[in-house]
Length: 402
Image 1 (tube, rainbow, N blue to C red):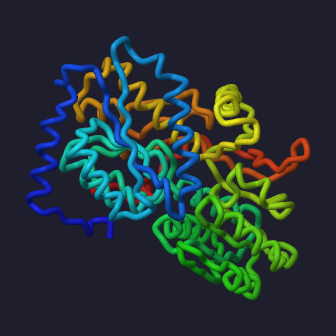
Image 2 (image 1 turned 90 degrees about the vertical axis):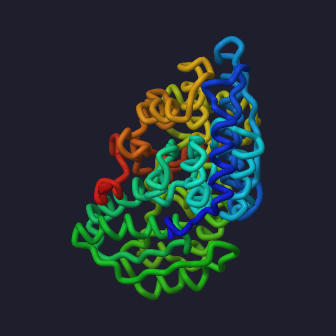
Image 3 (image 1 turned 120 degrees about the vertical axis):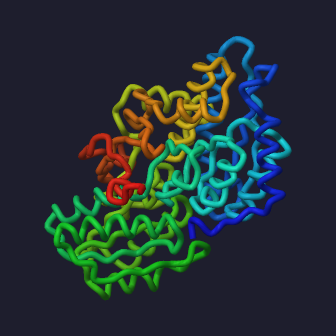
């Protein structure tokens, strides 16, 4: 599927011509033109909004730090949560708007559709979402991901679940590439630790009714259910189904990646998440100076009631990497120079802790936190109870490129 994209001769020629026309290193004016592709509408509009707010906030706070005479021009396009639309708007940004960089993209199917275009046009893409599709950076040498992969969270969680003495598990995930990665990563490490997967379900990406799936989990009686749904409304709906059907009261533990319990949705979930364990990259409750500064900026920009989540920080960090490139090159760079910089980029002061790009894979290396939902000052919070330091993408470790 990842390789199932072809390009007509005219499109390749158009993209190549666009690359020559852009020629970032030869621009007379020091204006850096960035194309943002995001799901402003569609079923992942809520996490996309969080990522966009993170990107916008970084620009607002740090545009003054750009080299003298260097300006940004940001062109935003909506992929409507659909890969074909994402591919089309990427083509427009490259061939009509002549952007020097692409950034954003929440959905991995959209990133999968866009990535080959970046190779044809030699336009770098900084992924600020899209945590699935572990092989996406392999589709183009002009892709770097500054966010996470589902395998980074799912594989450690499978090990952690086995360490709790749980021997049987049931996986229930959304039926698209992110869910498939979450399912595969957890199942691989859980079974490697002599655990047994006794059932597996996949539900439709849009407008799912979770009740029959949760009932099947309850009937199967595993010791732990591993659940993935996209962050946002579906996460709240899944938690309601888990609560209404008394899954935990039936003695079934819940484990998940951070998408199930995004910080901004915890207030909507009642008491149901208390004690639940997730693996993730960020929590607003984290006691790090960089996080305290980020939260202060966020509240000042969006109000005291606005709560960021991991997508917000992903957008913030994606822009941080782009700004570091612009400052290092005075806004004058070629696509290959940009990728050479990205492959060796480090962000020691991210709100989520130290992060860096693996030069071999162009994917993120970062801490993975095991978090437990607890009450802090009367509010639910994802509390980091254990840290797995500087995790590379396990899938690429297990499947080295030949």
